[in-house]
Image (cartoon, rainbow, N blue to C red; front, top):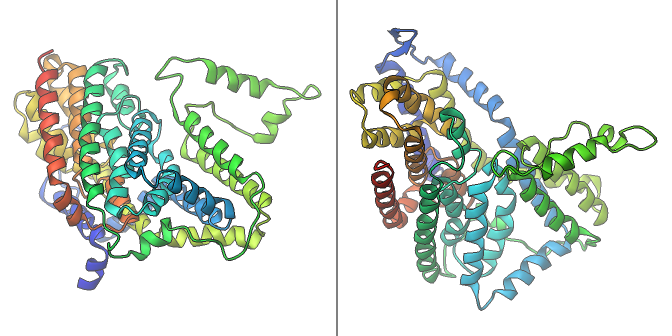
Length: 463
């Protein structure tokens, strides 16, 4: 068992949070309809919750598998290796510039996307280039997943974060946008400075990692495969993913996406909407879910396989191989979502938060929101076990716009440190970085972000 946890450092820390959530159900009563009772988690409940968790988050698991399979397929083509080499050679003497471009790309899109998991599509390409430029895995993590986390703490239009708060608090994306943008800008600058300092320490003698090498190091394919149109397909796929993931209507009040969607569905051939029937149900850009993105990636994969003359057997093998290579990251986030499912069905920790606030105070609310984020996992669940109760009990004393900024900032801060942070643990797992190593190397950045959040809370509460 000791050897298992030494090899699976991330699961150990995430598992500790899971054990705590189970213990809470044995220690604290849960308030339901005016009465408080124990709803303790037993052995059978534990396994039932696991099955529910897999079912509830299947789209996320399959999204990661599809992306892994897509890039395994890409590795079988000559063009992908050449593309990695071309980009890396272009920035060979300006590697820090590529790091900065990467960080801008992920941070901005993370702050805008309807679903952050769609952004995972771009991660393998950028990490492969960064490693080809001889930076270490920690720098690659900061440039990609670190930037995604900045987009969390300073989310402007992201549906996973500020979108959830807009929904429950019934405000708008524009409310207190200046504070959210300030959070984003300052947090991004902090991360850039920290990352470039880390990049200078990058060493070619870094211990090799079988996991990271298999996922991101691209070797020349054993069999020469032509790349007819593959570059065009990859570029077009990337563009469509970006366009489809931005909430044009709900966030920006743009109508072009809805108009394009209506035009497509109403286009007739011989008096019949054949394209609509051929494609089936389709959502307008800005409203896509993960299944839509997966369908698009699989379709593009098929086109690349046909254009590169990859056999059906090799096509299937690519996705099987991809699934094998992401098995460990999938295991880690399975435990994370297990925590979320336990807290959703057995919110005993809510009793602790209820007892911490007798009179409403924004700084106490921020403290509760931070720790609720560790156990709630996502914004929706975090709000349910903490913020919703505050609004219900103290609504006359609460400015909802202020509370929205506070919850977003402390939730984003928690994602940089919590063993239950999906993108933190997923990124560390992909790049084979122990959780303790992350804390030891990044504590200065985390302290800086803590100070930033405290300053923002102090400013926003003066409204």
